[in-house]
Length: 337
Image 1 (cartoon, helix red, strand yellow):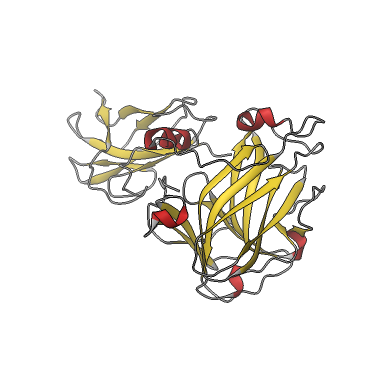
Image 2 (cartoon, rainbow, N blue to C red):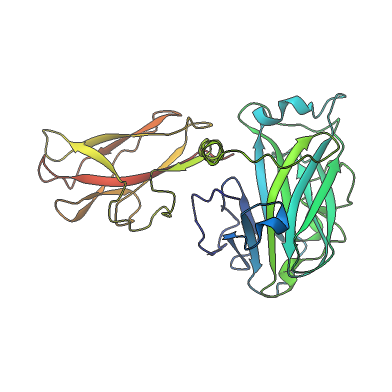
């Protein structure tokens, strides 16, 4: 949980069905304003395998979970990254999921491994938090499925889901594969039933085999680059996209002889999984604009054509007064699964 490009350490209330929070993790809430999420530093890393950051989910109300409700976090894993598992065939390999967990409410929690598309094949599991307010290490061993349709290439290969409250429509019996869209197991407790209850997770690892090995601590630069395959920003790491930054570290584009136009390229640090959705921001934080700092005005980005997996073109065709104007801005490029 060390990479948090989108939100940094800011506590964020989930107002949509699902939003990306810490890198690669989606936070899901079928009802708005019921949970929030945040990256937090861990006060005593030695208590949880020397992990230094956690993702925190906090309940914002005592919420009754309806049959079709769901609250939790998930990560889609790209097909290229699970090819060797042989899932959906007679050679399907067993995997082990391991993680450190902490919650203010003890009890039986759950999650699931499932296909990431509409083919609906899933394996619910449970784990028990024995003591509230204590870090505990958990492992779940999951037999390889010999059925189901599992994505390949750059599509979703599989989906790892942790529930903090799920309705009966999306819950099934723990410990077996079934042709259903389950994200949780029957018998779980719902964290969202309790106002201000909190759930923390870190050190999540999914690996081939029936035994959890020690966590694979990769260099920070390596971890960041792996995340940037799916999302990157031109802002400094400490700056949340869309923030008023004053121009520090911004991208500059060039005015041409026609004084009403400026051109530039957003070159990505890492090749994207697929052609990304690119969003531009002025240095004042206005989406869809760059900033003409010479004139003190925003300049609409009239054309933001994606140039493939490695760059995007920027064209501003209004708001330019002189070829000497300085045009600055930022971008994000999202290619999530």
